[in-house]
Length: 233
Figure 1 (cartoon, one colour):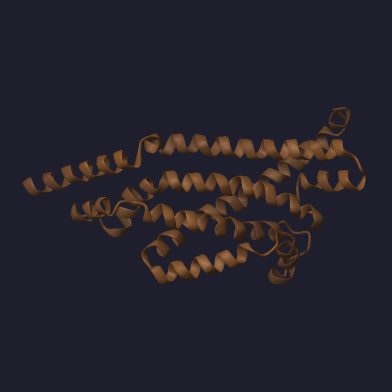
Figure 2 (cartoon, helix red, strand yellow):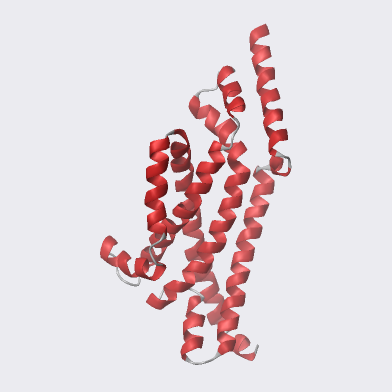
């Protein structure tokens, strides 16, 4: 505890850096997995190719990928871009399969009802398919968030790991207190990120607490009312 108080500025600085470097890949992974997952859910060949490619990328050891990034991107070895790109690749790889499952889990009856009442493909995606896939997407995003916060610590071995610095420095100095503090603050970041995602989920997905059958039936009834209104007009 004494070491933490004496080095609070260092720990808070590393915490802020860790949160920043983790947040960007999480957002990128989510944003990229939505169109890729939707496309893969519609075309079996694309699904096989995308899942295989990103599955292979995910098997690359994180340290090796961090080291290879400057050679691939032509960036400086200590550039933040190296870590952000590498973690974004892992985030997409983790999120993609969940996104595909989320979109394929949406009831075909609901999609057909949306088409029947005149929804174009783009409108149907934003107003029907994406909201219904939202709970599954959120669950996968929470896993990606925790994994990304954890993986970033490995980048300390190339000088860009945020709180991972406390792990390597504590190990080199045989000072376990520093390692424990690094673990605690890493867990706090993961917890805060998860609470933020849960809060966002409650805000934009109020139907998340209902069962899937109830959601689908409710939306089908809603779309059916539009269909009947259109027929009577």
